[in-house]
Amino acid sequence: MTLEQIVSDINRELRAQLEKYHCVRGQLRYQAPSMVSLNGTRGDGKPVLIWQNAPRLPYLLSLYVDQLSGCGGVTVEVDLSTDRFEYKPLSIAVIKQEAKEQEEQESADEKRRQQAYRRSLEQQTETYGMALASAVADALLHNSIGYGHRDYCGTGLEYRDGVYYYGELMDGFMWEPFLQWASKQDFIQWLARQSDASLARLEAKEPFYWGNQTITRNRLTELLNAKR
Image 1 (tube, rainbow, N blue to C red):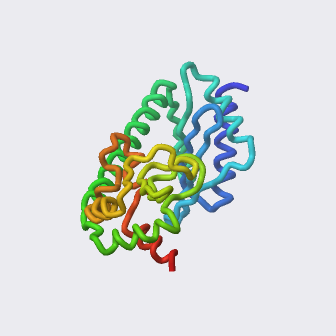
Image 2: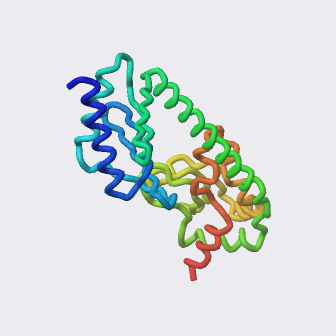
Image 3: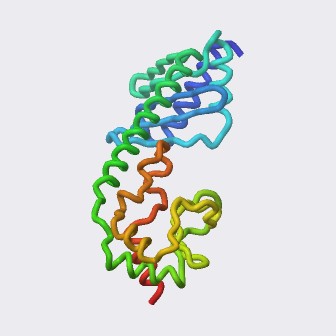
């Protein structure tokens, strides 16, 4: 097939799909080898996303791209009212640059979300106090705090063989505690001075750990409720 024949077949396919959904305009983007998106706009201005369930349009678009040296995709602006089909080939270099810019934008957005979450954790500074800490110390004699699933499970509190433990859990087990207390009173004094912020692991360089299944006032309260 010649390039002219390929373009004619693409136009025919685009017209058929847009008319099927009563659209008067459309925007297509194709990126080799098979990424196709087609958006239409109806006469009342309502947008329509047109899914590609048949292989013909992607096949024709791949033929179009193969005809052009260094081409990695194409966009097509369609206006059926004026029978306009405007093609804009996308070079492989442009597609790579767009992908890089999108990755950088997503990374920047994620860092902003992480910092906003960190700031919210930093504000949760109300200490647990002696009453809650004492009740937790008693409850740990019969139960523990810690999630039990695969991989990282956050932090937990346990009482084993006369010793209180605080530490990280993996696969539901506390392999190497961060802290331990043989004295119940020492543990209570420590826990009473803590807060959701101080136990949110904000000292970790990796944001993955910030507030991820860490000890909180809610979890301490849940332990007490479970005891009842």
